[in-house]
Each structure stands twice: as C-alpha cells, then as structure tokens.
Length: 294
Image 1 (spheres, rainbow, N blue to C red):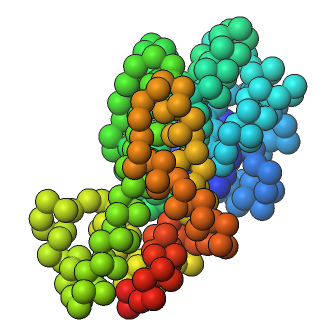
Image 2: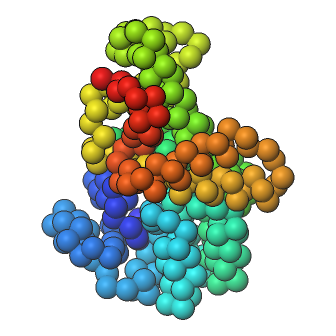
Image 3: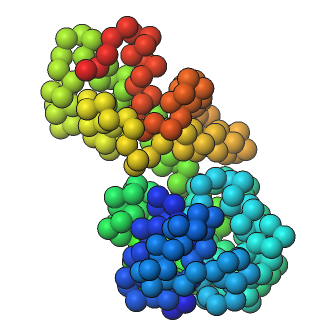
C-alpha cells in the first residue's frame, strides 16, 4: 500500500520505519529535512509539499507535536484536507483536543476523504518495536481498512467509537499519566525524608496496591536523577493537561486532581524544567521540602 507519513519526530520516525520494513511504499514529509534524508536512505520516498504526498498515497498518517501544527497541516490553505483525494483516509496519531479532531473530521468529509483520530501511547521504545497502544475514533469501515497498517505499529489497537472517541480516551490516559507522575514523586520523597531507602520503597510498593506504570517508569529516573533523557519532556505532559482541562470544562466533568496537577506542571515549566523528563516534577517538591530524594 502507498502510505504517506507526515511528522518524523520521536514517535513518527520509528513508526514510519516499521511501515517501511513491513513492505509498504512510504512517502514522507517533515520540516527537518535531515530526517527525510535519513528515511530516504532506508527506501522511503521524499515529498516537498503536502499536495505531493496526497497525490501518491491511499492513506496518510500524521504524528505531530501540538494543536497548532495539526491544524496547520490538516486545515491550512495548502494542507492535507485542501489537497485530499476522494476516498483517501487521513489518520492523526497526535494528541490534540476534541475541537481540533472534529474540525479535521468535518473538513475531511467535505473534501470526500475520511478522518480517523488515532492517538498513541507507549513512548519511543514501544514506537520502535511496534507495541504501541492505539485508540481509534471515526468511521468503522475506514478503521477496518487501515487495521493491517495499525497492527504494524501497535500491540493493542481498538476502535473505540465515533470521531473524537480516540482523542477522549487518549486524554483520559494522559490525565492518569500526569496525576500518577506527581503522586509517584510525592510518595517517594515522603518515604525517603521519613528515613526509608527510595529504591526499597519502590521495590515494595511496586508489588502492592500502590503500583502504577508511572511509578515504575518514573522511579528509575528519579532515583538515578537522569532527568535529561530524550524519551519524553515535561512540556508535553503540560500540553496534554491543558487539553484535558479544556475537555473537562466543555463536558462539565470535575477533575480536581487534574487541575492541581496542571498547576504543578505549569509551575515546573515556568521554573525552567519544561525540557526535562516528566519525572522532574520531583524537583520543585525537593525544593519545598529542603530534601533530595537521593
């Protein structure tokens, strides 16, 4: 199948490599031309415009960093929807808000194309080995058509309902990611300041009811203090928490812990931690307690 892939970032690059390795013809487009050249060396076909990528493909996937970029790529005057072919399937793997998802879906429908919101979860490691979780909203027939492609990228791939459903489930996921990140930092710091060894705290709690994926993921980073890794950034979680608040306000659903977590992440970003790993949410807590975890 001829596939277009727009956005060769931390997640998009390994995802596009998997599609190429699976035998598909992959047309790529990205702002950073070095990544386009890297993919070209592996056998991908470079494109110089969104119009060009729509002309050669049946399915186009995007994985973009923020709402502004998604709206520009899909809804811009020379964007994907303006150039979409009749029957073409557009899949957005980005994390955005329901409003943006609906705008893209409505635009695609007017252009005779189909739009699927299919956010992903799992981080760069799982993007590289094809074991992502993919939650997809939109037309079921279109989902069934592209399921073989999504199965290349994900271990858990589900159609969760109409347009916006995938986005909603991803934001629920990110709500828990943010809350659990703050909770893990708070808990480990409390236990350590009370005299317990941080590693032992994790080892024990990780076998009890207090276990969570973010506790396991973040404890390693917090204990080793390797906050400058390239797997994820605090600013991304902050962006998602803002989208969660927008959704919660729209549907009038209370998110007291989400609001508190959002405020903490805002403060952390304003203090210069935005490019660090999300587990760096620990650092302001250490400052407040006058105690370092390790």
